Length: 257
Image 1 (tube, rainbow, N blue to C red):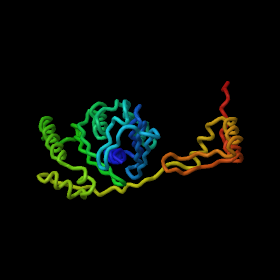
Image 2 (image 1 turned 180 degrees about the vertical axis):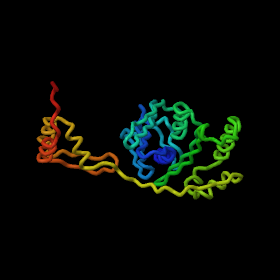
Image 3 (image 1 turned 90 degrees about the vertical axis):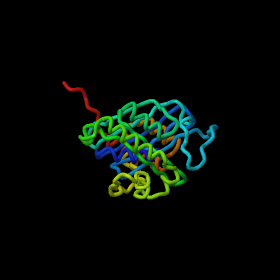
Image 4 (image 1 turned 30 degrees about the vertical axis):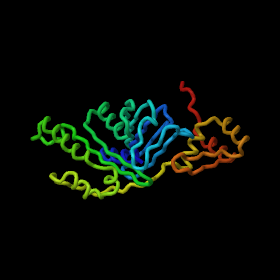
């Protein structure tokens, strides 16, 4: 939940059409946490963990510690539609997901960033404060003044409690935190779970596998089942499907003379 909230907030700062993916992976009992936001409109996420986690889990509403992830890396990937992907990778640092993401911006982007996250049951929320790049800042504000502004704003935000973050509407929350500032709200962007899996994408995966391997699976299982780890939809293919997949596959290009 916290990673989904963080990913939605970060995606809103990337003004490109495409996908932003945040993944934390380590050698702990929680091996992978991944969240993806597409076009600032759809979200999906996944967690991979051992069947039994020996470490104590936090109580509801309390952030999960990164000790459950262990030693590892945080990867943020931006895939613009029709453009080249960009990827940044940093070591996992910090004691919470929020601190891990803050560490990414400190190490990789050198952009002052603070993040507050909270998740409980089916609700997740976050607050992101990020300094504008120097070229976008108001010309009359010196570098020292901008640092002081950022420090003042983050100190005020540090008074925020997890229950307030989840339970108070945005306008009330921001006005309460920054009562000496002029608060302007953008129109809300609706977010929804949406998976990008499809039968055609599953067929493409089959097309990339050797036909002999597919026929071995068919002989042993009767059908080939491919299940989506995000939405749990199961796609099944029989011998006729495999025949069609490989019959329709483009022929390999021969050597040119």
